[in-house]
Image 1 (tube, one colour):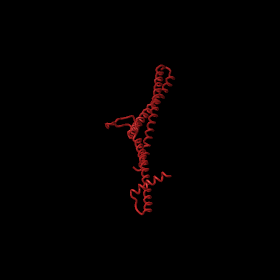
Image 2 (cartoon, rainbow, N blue to C red; image 1 turned 45 degrees about the vertical axis):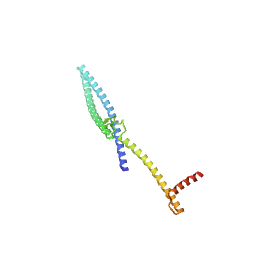
Image 3 (cartoon, helix red, strand yellow; image 1 turned 120 degrees about the vertical axis):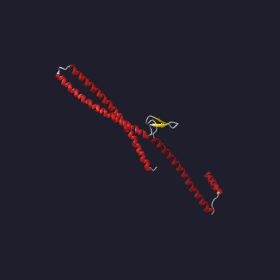
Image 4 (cartoon, rainbow, N blue to C red; image 1 turned 45 degrees about the horizontal axis):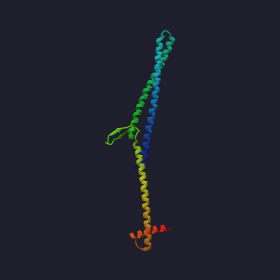
Length: 196
């Protein structure tokens, strides 16, 4: 996978996580609005009943009856608006819950596998998602790459010094060194290192 593909995947994964967070926040917000709307609807219904009760108690007082009827119409209009808003909010909430569920399924953090290979549904977000696993794999691979770079650097450094030592030996003796010459060179280096 190229760096551009990895960056694009990281960007898409980040966008996906942000969509989930926004969907969850919208669900919480809509739930609060829904509760407020239900409370207002219940209040309007109580006012509607009180106005209706007032009309029944004093049918002979026309002014009170007209005012109560106007109040009743206002409350009924308000109640109808709240019911429509409530229905709309419930529909939006259901759509957001479906989108949230779809995004969790896509992140693969809403199910796991048991030891027999059977799928188990879990609470969304309760296990590391595929993105977290991929990021951990990338981190481990980068560590391994750094370790191998150090090994390769050591090998290159060793090869350079070996080549230089061979060139120096050949310049002095006009022959290529054999195993005994290398052992003598190494021991000689160690001995000179001890003497210093």
